Image: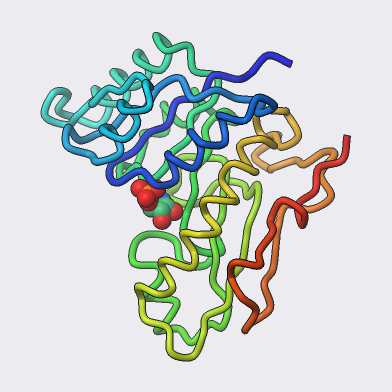
Length: 230
Ligand code: GRF
C-alpha cells in the first residue's frame, strides 16, 4: 500500500505532532509526515519538526489578514506539499466552512475530552468542576463546527480523587499520544472513513478504550483494545 502523505497543523508545543512523527518511523506505518504548518512563527513544535528533517512552514494571520485569505494560503501550501491527509494537533484556529468542506473526510483533529462532552477550551478544569469520574480524548473528522465532526476513536481515563488540572492534563495527554497514531492508521488505511456526515469503521474490532477508575495509567494498551482485523 502507498503510504499516505500527512501534513500536521499546530499552534504550540506539538507533543501530539511528535507522537505522529514517531509513529511514521515504523516501516509498516501507512503514512509519512511530509510537512508541519503552524499559524504562529514561534510555535515550539516547528523547531522540533525541523530538527527531525521535516519541512516546516508558518502561515500566519499577519501574513494573511482575514480568515478566508489565511485558509486559501493554507490550502495552496497543502496542495504544494501533496497532502493526502491533514492532522490538526493543537491548531488553535477555527477553519472556514469552505476549507473543511474541501478537505472533508481527509482532515482529522484530536480533542482532550470525550466528545460531545466538553467542546472548546479548558476541558480538564471543566471536567474537574463537573464531578465527572471519567475523562479522555477523542479523534474526529473535522467539519465546520468546533469539535463537532464524526468520532473516529476515543480513550477514557479515570479522574482520581485528588487530581489537579495538571494531573488530569498529563494523564489525558499520555493517552492522546497513543490514540492519535492509532486513529491516523485507521484513516490512512481506509478503515475509518467519513460517509454522509458519519464516521464509518470497517475491519476494526473497537476504536475505544476504557480504563476502570483506579487502574494504573501506564497499563493502558489502546492498541490491543482497538485491534484491527485484516
Ligand atoms: C492537546 O491536548 C490536543 O488534544 C489539543 O491541544 C493540545 C495540543 O497539545 N487539541 P500538543 O501541542 O500536541 O502538545
